[in-house]
Image (cartoon, rainbow over all chains, first blue to last red; front, side, top):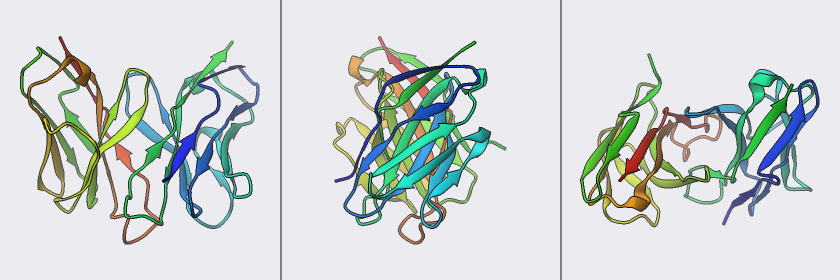
Amino acid sequence: AQSVTQLGSHVSVSEGALVLLRCNYSSSVPPYLFWYVQYPNQGLQLLLKYTTGATLVKGINGFEAEFKKSETSFHLTKPSAHMSDAAEYFCAVISMDTGRRALTFGSGTRLQVQP
Amino acid sequence: DTAVSQTPKYLVTQMGNDKSIKCEQNLGHDTMYWYKQDSKKFLKIMFSYNNKELIINETVPNRFSPKSPDKAHLNLHINSLELGDSAVYFCASSQDLSRTGRNTEAFFGQGTRLTVV
């Protein structure tokens, strides 16, 4: 069975500092990986995804993530945090070796950005 | 021109009532989902439908019954509501994941905050 672990339920950074949100997955084959962002009282918006090909993936709002198969990780980064980045971030996985084609989500990381 | 729309956005109801949440997508997707987000923000799949056929039915009380009249709509009906049903319910849609992996992302609605009192 696939699973997703997000280390750190809360991350606080200063405006302009590096953002690093951690995600590790468990899957029998390389899965498809996603990062979603949820702003307060809103739905989930896709930030970026990895399916195949280049392991460094760039997304919206200056975020990027790197798929590292050896570490089973897909950490999300942004070089310089902005106040508007404060939100809940979810890592998610779809394992392509099963018929269960639905997103399995991590528990989420709340990002706070201090002025 | 909202891609995935669900109604209502807020729903407050008493224990024991029956309620429905409606979802519609205009993206031409084949697959639709219901997710439940609990008070700790954890998201869990409840159901998925592909071309009106039930594909995923997680361990959900049978008081919850999805209905898909066509592939653009997936409604969620809940009977005999309980306090523990209070949560945010998200509808989502995606392309048929069994056919291709390239268009795999799910598009989410704005959520329905259900409060059972």
